[in-house]
Length: 261
Image 1 (cartoon, rainbow, N blue to C red):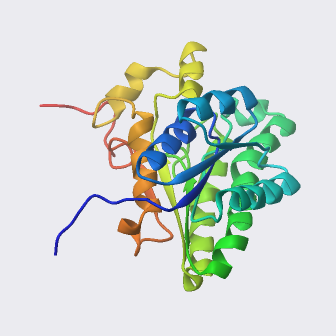
Image 2: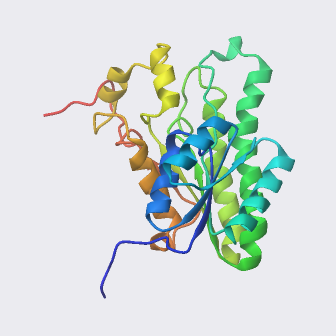
């Protein structure tokens, strides 16, 4: 049986957090594979720039933590695209990097509202379209910060751990109706968000590289390609899974830096 590279020709995709980083890169990859894409973000200037970079695509301003906005934007995007086959939930906010005893609840709740509540609301809105049509693929964004204990990440880590659980729950609910739900769990990725943490002195890239078996940060393209795979028919029998794209971070269990030979 001949095997060819997978295609997303004819697919309609909605990507949250599409103004920059993983979301923006994924949009370009899905488009290059043949999908029609629509982007959402709270960053309207970034959306405009990304639309121009893609040669023109649908964009919608949306705060995914707002239930009414999430429902309305998914419906509007599906109407404008002529359907909805793929939903990528890339919208997220970074942690404050504070010890638990120093945290205030308002910013903690905001991280939960965007990362977890926002992902759920967008999944649910997408499924209102996908379940009746009997097919669709949803890809959420988890993180290596989720499964393990990370000091000073007591909002971001739990929000991403919950996305792993949410992905399993929704995959089991919607699988019988032909809708697959998976997640990608990136390690540290060279995105503007991470660049800001590096600039602020909150991340030491040398330490990260030494701790990672592949010895470097991921590129946004490597994460986007993994998302595209899970959204494609090549992953047609994969659901409820979190694919950690982390350069071996989760595999490494040694003490200290990875040792080479």
